[in-house]
Structure formats: structure tokens, C-alpha cells
Image (cartoon, rainbow, N blue to C red; front, top):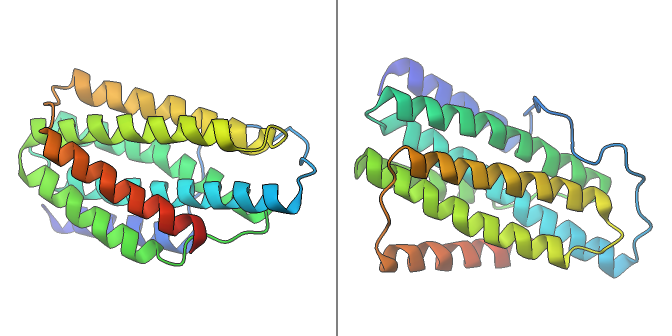
Length: 207
């Protein structure tokens, strides 16, 4: 952990929480027309995209913390690459929220702080446990993104295109961590991760 890495981490947190992230890739589905949604469909789509945006806030915190304490330089670079792609997700979901006339979660600073602490704990347990945490996190995220694709209004092809690309990226990040030597996590840890994610999703959907 160096002064430079701390400065980079602070800058990432600031950009994440102020919404000043610029995507490297174009928004999926940008060429699609804005769908005509019923009010209840728009509210549901906005709630789901707010959850996804909050998930990306958490991902930025997790990767920043895990990279900060990773021992292996190759592992650290893998985290950096994944974090750059997650920045695209953050920007895409933020843009879609704006199109839906909705706001991000008011609790994003809290979600970021909690995820950063969890990422530090995972990182301090060692690189292979750290990577295993990524594998399990991305597996659970992939599951919930699939559920969101099924739940989003069929006519909201713009939101569905974003979530579909996010799911593909998350699957690749999980495969990367597994290939790098991630260890399976104990069942109680995996269950606790799911419970924490369930709370985040339920709250972020509304607040």
C-alpha cells in the first residue's frame, strides 16, 4: 500500500460517488428508440436500474480495496482491468437512470464504505481467497442480472441491452478470477454474501 495507491483509491471513490465516470465503451442499445412505458413499468425499470447502479458502486469499492492489499502484481492488474470495465457499467446505468427520470440510491456512500471494508477483509485473507471472493461475487451478480432481464418490461429494450452486456462482462470477470486461482469460499461466507446482497437490492430499489 503506497501513497500513490491511496490517492488513486480516493480519486476512484470521488468519481464513483459524484457520478463523473466516463465510459470507455458506448452504451449498449444506444441506437434503440426510447420505449413507451406505462408508469408502473417505468417505476419498476427505474428501481431495477438503481439496484444495478448501486451494485456497480459496490463493485468499484470492492475492486479498489482488493487491489490495494493484493500481494501479486498480476492479480492487482487483473483487478484494475475488471474495475475499468465496471466503470462502464456504472456510467451506463447512471445514464439509463437519467433517461428514466430517476435518481441513484441516496445511500450509495454507505454502500461504498461497506463494500470497501468487505473488500479489504477479503484481500487481507490472501490473494487466492481474495480471488475466490471475486468468483462468488460475480456468480451471484450474474444470477441477479439474469433475474433482472427476465423482470424488466419486454418493451424496455434499452435497459435490457445494458443489463445483458453487464452480465456477459461479470461472467468473464468471474472466470478470470477462477483461472487465476480463486479458492471456493465456505458455505457460511457465501450465504452471508447473498444475505447482504439481498438487503442492498431491497433497499436500493426504493431509496
